[in-house]
Image (cartoon, rainbow, N blue to C red; front, side, top):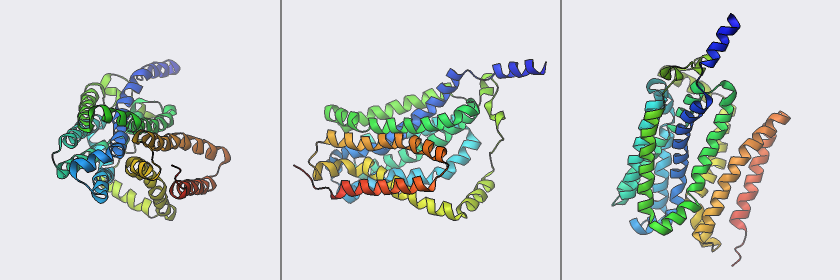
Length: 325
């Protein structure tokens, strides 16, 4: 009888195709977030001409996305617990659509910056909301897969913002392409609201959240937890590494890579965009490979240091290798 009841309960879990569909809508917003992050890199000339920008102003325009994105990280966790992923993701997608349209139709530098600021804050909800959906809709054995696939979704968005975006901008202009990007994001907001539910229980299924303890916290608990985390010496040191490694890659691939490669090496914008996209593709494959190797040998620090050395050599080659015209 006990076995029969367990089998019955198991049969009431949501079917995997539905669970992955729900998760994938959150992943699409994460994809759009990476697309928006990298897009300015391939339209730098258009932006500088359109708004009469110098290099500093262009950098500031791109950085506005990151300012609001970072500022939303802690509030996103709290909102995910209080609003639920459905409301959080649909509101984020709707706000991102508005920000993209504001950027696309902006008459001045101020309004284009306001659009970028709104987009960054909006897409910041994607990763946490997507993992929240995974923890409720997918079995525990699929959670790591969902987390890894999230990175691939992001990289796809970044790659789309490379050569494909450059070709579309050459054909139609940057403003029409960004208008369409905003409309696609608006459609995603409607799809999330229509399809996604916070928990399978809302659709008559058994929730996978019961498979693991509830780790939601009140806001006070969040701040206490953050204070405890920052108290660890290794955590403070590891804060610096992503800033140096990840920050430099995102800055180069997301803004300065294309103008640098076209100016220093004489590449076309399309070829330069392809090379910056290749950096992101290597990132997508390098993460799982290093992770699997680390698990296999049971060591983290040697691979971490080795990766930093390889990155330093790569940057040295990129910066100091003479151009061949």
